[in-house]
Amino acid sequence: MNIDGVLTRRRFLRYASVGGIAVPMFATTVLPNVAHASVFQLPADPENLTDMEKLHIPKITLPPVVEDGSQAPIVVEVDHPMEPDHYIKNIQIMNFNDPVVIKGKFYFTPANGEVYLGTQIRLAGGESRVWVVAECNKHGKWAGSKDTKVAAGGC
Image 1 (tube, one colour):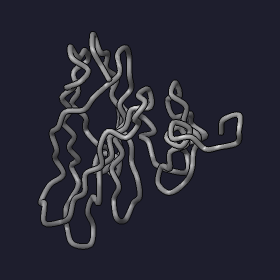
Image 2 (cartoon, rainbow, N blue to C red):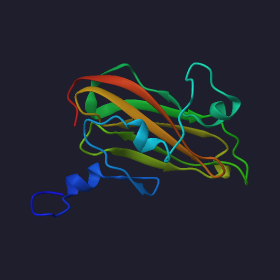
Image 3 (spheres, rainbow, N blue to C red):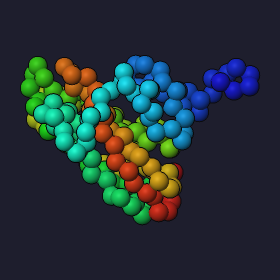
Image 4 (spheres, rainbow, N blue to C red):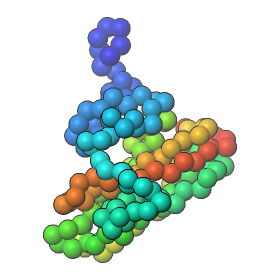
């Protein structure tokens, strides 16, 4: 809150709700372990994923260096079954270094057949870590991240 005790729009975005749990997120924060531990799951060892992690951790394709921050290409896919009783409900793309943290939320149903999306997002200049959270209807939220550097432009 600001000096007057009023919740501003910017402060609200910094205290964005992740999975229904209000977690303070500051523009320079990269998800401290305490904040995300109860919200979503990360791989224990990113180099050696378990079978459960292989099914749920999003695979992110994002260039290591982006020339134009206003048009950063990103591809997200999850190797998860899309059955009526077990499927990925949604994918959320976030960057906590930007004024607008949430870059997009995409919904899926078993009728989609697979979890795959390609889009462009806006990124602020400099180095960033883009987070992607996949929500399984049975196993909760799983997160992956990818680092990138915006050479020029940005939002």
